[in-house]
Structures are given as C-alpha cells and as structure tokens.
Length: 308
Image (cartoon, rainbow, N blue to C red; front, top):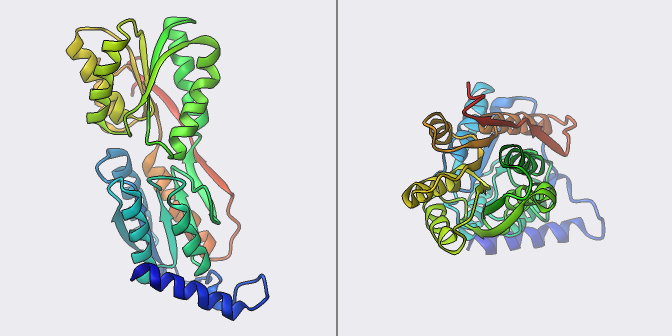
C-alpha cells in the first residue's frame, strides 16, 4: 500500500509537470521561516550500535534546542525495513529527511521517492548511491582508514601481516574505510586475510576466531568499526595471543577497552557532532541558505598513550 501511494504521487507529479523539467511548486522544498514548524524524520541504520545511538542523540538534542520536532525510526540493519520506514516518514509529513543508510545502494529508491515529493534529504555517516542529497555529513572515512594503516606501520614496521574485518557490504563507510586503509596497506603492509563481519561485535568475534585458525601468524587487525574490533579483541584473548587491534568510531566501549589495555587504538569520530551538524544543515536548507555538499567532522587517533 505504501509503495502504491508513492507511485501514485510520483505519477501525479509527472502529469502536473507536463513536459517541463521543473517540478511543480508544491513539490519543491518549502522554505520555513519559523524553526518550530519543522518536522525532521530521522532514519537510523541500527540503534543496536552505540555509535548510532550517539548520532541519534546529537540529532534529537540539537533539534530540541532549535525548537524542531524529530521522529526517529530504527532500520535494525535491514535495508528493506529502512525503505518502508522512510515511506512512513513521508506519509507523516516530515519537512526534511535525515538518513543514515544501512546500504548506500538500496536506500537510493527511498531518496528518489523523497526527491519526487520535494522533501530534502541529508545523509549521515554513509552516502546514497543515487538520488539527490543536499549534503553528506560524515567523517572523512578514507582518511580514517589510512590513519589506521599508518598507525600499524608505525607500531610494527613495514611488511607486518594484517587481517582486515570489513563492514556491511554495500555501505559507503565500508568502501571508503577499506579504500583508505589500502592506500597505505597495499604498499607497506601484508594483508593476509580480510572478511566482512557486518559492523557487528558477535560476528567480529566469530570471524576473528576463524581467521586466527587459518592465519596463525597474523600480527595486527584493522576493523572497520569498534564493535567488530571489540569482538576481535575477545577472540584474540581467547586464543592466548597478543595481537594489536585498531577499530574505528571512538565509541564509549572502545575507549574503556583502550583504557583497560585491551583494544589498542581507534580512529575516533564524533557521532553527536555529526548529528548536530546534520540538524543545522536541515535548518539552513529549509531557510533557503546554501549548504556544502560535504560537511566533514574531524577525526582523531586514540590509543592508550594519548587517551584523555
């Protein structure tokens, strides 16, 4: 029924627009002078990950500070559910969509539906492959991946044998963090194994156990997020080995693990800041202000030596 509703609206839009390439006035983003009139729809990939909980908190708190309403939906790492969630938000009459995609390709249809209805879309942490997005608010994932590889080289020297735990296939963060990592790793490290663990701690543990059995000479691990890194730390501890693990995100569990001398380091993002910047971008967009196509939040390598 939801998809039928969107198809009918899209068809109506085409009829009303006629031969013009411009959408009718009612389908263009509406400018809002009063922030209290703005209703934000936030679709998060999963609230089972502390990083995205912090991101959501940043959005909700900043929106509340500015007097805006926020409706939050949790995709539970299910791209089909996320598309349905976005359709629900559109039916609820949101003025702007903030989307943290589960899958950058799959979410494209939902972004295009919002485009058809004139609802501006802002993506957080991960991009959408297709459709018009006002801006992507994210850390520089490529730079962060390279920071992780550089850290391993500094700690272990060139030629070290490394395993890579990859994130959800299809997610832009997975592609970009892997790309950045390999900019250095392909020249200065020996990546002996890599496998997806879907940004999940339990899968990180299971995958790491298997990798250790097949590659007992692994000297370091880079995980595309802290959840997988923490799972890898547990697997390594169970094997009795001492192998440094570098994660990505800087969530609270990871910082505590570094403090306890377990996780070696993490490329720390600022998820609450990402959420805050996305809300400000939404506000600016709906008030007719210019917004940059990419809004970057700074990164920092955190280890036991420099943890505050």
